[in-house]
Image 1 (cartoon, rainbow, N blue to C red):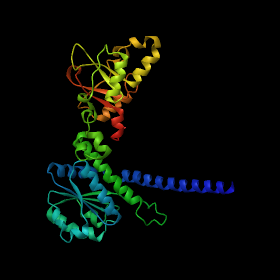
Image 2: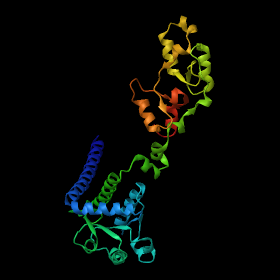
Image 3: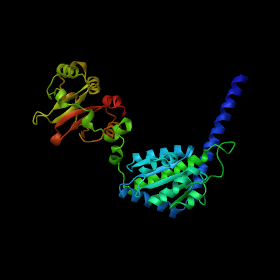
Image 4: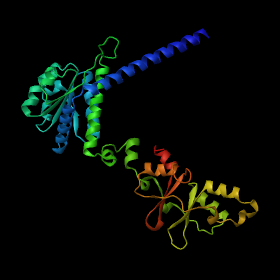
Length: 342
């Protein structure tokens, strides 16, 4: 018991230390936000907008841990539609500077603002007329003085107990980069469709691009039931298609949806009717009339929302219809789960 108590005490101690470190980093970001100059922030956004308008590049550079942050910021901007790349400053001095054009904008990250490799690149950027934004810990540093825009990312101390390892400073620099990306998205009116262009794969890409038509079981693979189809034939029809549901066709308008019939509908109907009357039940007695439907071009995530949050109850099958309630297919929750969307 004593060992268990000691173990729990140690666990609480570690958790408390972790919480303290996270709170210190959060405080560093909050303080940095207060220190930022609104004029400098606006100037940075305008440079980014100019970069996008001219279809130029955003070049981001840094050394060491700042270089890792620079790579992440470049990846973020690329993902939202502004062409961005990371440039290793040492490689830049040995030929890679050729990727930088006069119309481009360059982010330079350095906590000290005195990073030798960046200071050696700086005059070459000036000579080309490339826009320069410095994210630095000291606004009055050499890098800050040589830039068009300076975003101060200073911290009072690192989270590291030795106050040496880049921790709070890198968190602040990355947060500023993320915030610039978010504001740029707002200014440019980036839509989910725009975002999806650069995220075609994975769960995120599916959510932003896949429509009901992409995942539905097409009507060509479904056998329609008629309103007067008997209970044995209804069961046979559901079994034949093998998807646990079927659709009832409007006899006055071939191809039009009159109702939907699922295994759940069948069980509930049998519960609600005396067994002596089962032989007289038809598809019209068993089906859900006027079911909730979606159009074929609706994103599957929107269709999922209708399945889970609608005026009636959560449903597992959604008819996909066209004009005049013409059935196009059935979208099943099962297919959404298999696609990793539910």
